[in-house]
Image 1 (cartoon, helix red, strand yellow):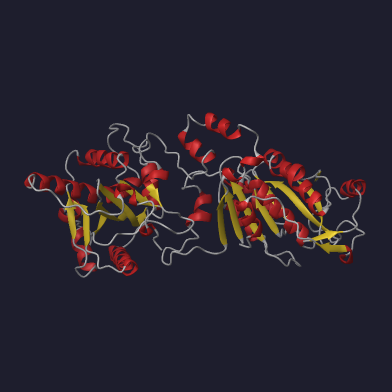
Image 2 (cartoon, helix red, strand yellow; image 1 turned 180 degrees about the vertical axis):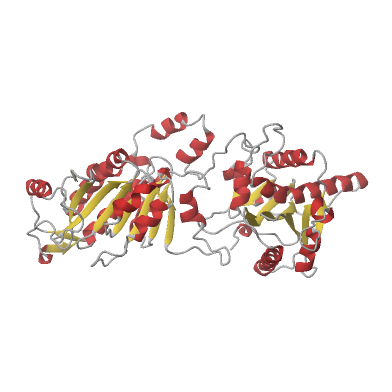
Length: 531
């Protein structure tokens, strides 16, 4: 990394900043400087970063998200990356977006002026102006003396509402973007429109990147969808290499925090499990609306296995059938792939795949084709000839649908699958819904059900399925009830069959397969890697 041998004095820099206060991005002539390219030398200095900050610092991906608990060093790491871009490029413009003036000024700008830039000045003699403010726009800026002896610029703007984003940034051509507190921004417009401005600035040799920091919210938040869910190709199991996501753990930043900081956070958020998980543990956890049926029992860090970022989740185990649960409808259809695996101590349910169309019409013919493709996929991946059981509710078997030529759901599915899929019914009598709720609660409490991290809708259902206002023992009608049905129909039918078998063979000791080391085999086995 180069270092100027001769630089303006701080007094000259202050005068220079005052003279150019209010200058816009399209100014052709940057502030005058006496430094030339012949007056720089090379150095191998690097900022004092923790391991994750170092990975972020050197990552060339086009879009980078750094999330984590409070005090983990997200902003500090991305600020160093921003300064590096300004220093390495001629006439760079690093744009900092903030949801409010106060957030930007007291957050990332404070870190820049008090920690990041002083570190660079001590490390390589970096010269920069103090922050100035455009009197017309109230935007704040800092000039950075780059390696070529010319000037790059850091520009901080506030974007309080999605409606103002286009008008505020349309005349700006940034070569680098840092969006601070991204989960506090209302819509994905905070990603789409700023990112669309990249690539227009001339003379930039290195990567032009959109970077962002945030504390985690729920998995349904648009930030999670844009950076974590959508970049993953479900067919190949690979992530779009343009997107990088980093959890910046607070444990790597403990030495830089005041004594007792973590203990203070733990005490402040002890009363709120959701905020505790988000701000103390750095987890993406949904805050259920209303009285969520499974809120007290579903614990993602226990019941969810795998890693979305690594495209890793549960896979079916050889030797046991795959049970597919169905809840079919014209607009809401949910299909869930499960296994029931007996272990040394108890029976474990695994939810490892799903196909859902919640709120969108889909022809049964197309849906059945998707299901058969997924069946074939798992047979090929695990290299095992699984037997498949297909479980729906009784209405799919015995309820006639008069539309068109008229048919039963089970008939249509069997016809479109050429006989490969034959639905079997689950009892749906009075009290069966409440019974399935109790069954799910028992499985969660006893840690007898585990959900693949890649099954986002199952995870969302367990977090967000509310109870009915008139009967708190059953779910309220919502899109998540279809997911609940497709998960619990196979479980309920299997439990009923097991109970009947137990009554008929109560003098026979069943032979159970031992899988791993009992119920704890799931977290560590190689079978957890889905792709």
